[in-house]
Length: 174
Image 1: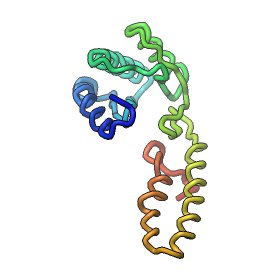
Image 2: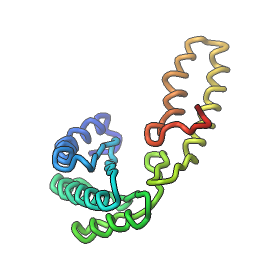
Image 3: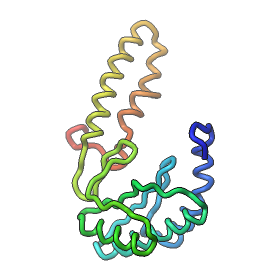
């Protein structure tokens, strides 16, 4: 796909749908999802199950992506509740596919903090501060033009809540 192509997201979904559908049917415990041009695979359970399903899902994903000639990013990462689990999955993926995958306990993807065990909210807090600044500008603009109020629904709120689906809202923010 070409950068800047208007229908790139649509084409990416079209390309990835059969791969994700096969994975959902083959290994339902390793739930892969597509976010624009990123793929994320969520596995929950006991440590042994996570290692088994996670590595098996990653191997299937690598095989399918290679068959469609999709580039696998060198930034690929396994995030787990413990570094030992992440390393086990990473080692199996490398030994069986040759793809190096970083092992971590926390990460950032598309500007959203995530982790296997600890909640990290640094980027979400920055996003909230920027949304407050945006709201102040919108309030200034609406004093002269009430049509600017729609910017709250189309810009400010989506920017503020982006990422909350990963971890949910912090209790202090409710």
